[in-house]
Length: 321
Ligand code: SER
Image 1 (cartoon, rainbow, N blue to C red):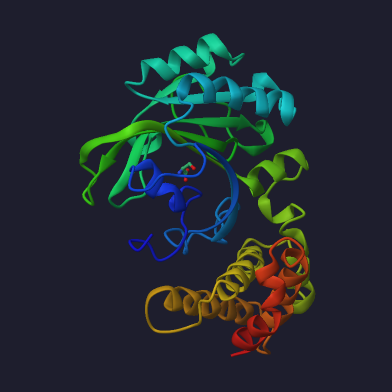
Image 2: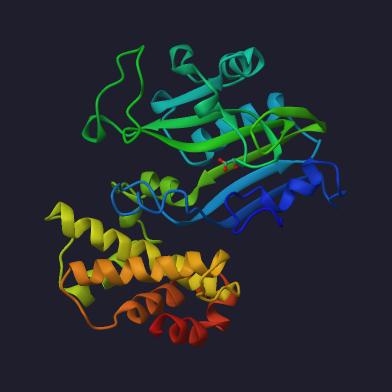
């Protein structure tokens, strides 16, 4: 997609099918997609929820199934498939989306008072630039009292406690760069996205993405190379989270052909490297340590993503600067 620097969502490569510009060989797809978001760069490390690189699980319909099918399927997957307790789940719907509200109520086991209407900020999805868009339903999982305030039945839900685990977008419209709806898609479609790291945290019974098996080895390596220990001090924890997050992004960006530069994708990579070095210094480490961390990423991702294994040497060379 020439309008984007990086793959910000699992649906990016499918825009052409949603918009009817091209015909897909299939009307249904399921993916695990490497995603990268920079909007949150300064948040990464500060919170335990934000990541630059993440893996998004998704299922897609290009004019095939729509709301009536995907809502009960999503429910079946999270309850029967993943084994999440139905009572802990909430489903949000766009303010005016009566169809989705009715379908959650009639074709799933979600508690009626756990179906919440929300405005366009939360429940209308678009890429932020011209392209397909539509109302969405988010599935939230209540992680319990230890994570935040109990919902009072009317106000806002605490984001850490009621964690968004899956977004189901009912792609119906097209919007322009300013966010105005300018048309309808040729056929209603579906784009869903679930963050692998968030689901892994719940299933593995750990508090944050940084403690899951996809990130903990990088965090441990960051502790080992800096001598700092995680979970004792808010300031050093932030730096350790930056050092756990950024090397995954560096390794996967370089494996996809990005090299540091002063513009575009290359500038994003350069900022990541600089930010990681800065946080290593804040932890009192002046020596080059990023290659140790990208090495751990190569070991973790190489068996799954062949381009990461193939480019191991290049990753080390570029990160070593
Ligand atoms: N495009 C939606 C999102 O990124 C669902 O995949 O949340």
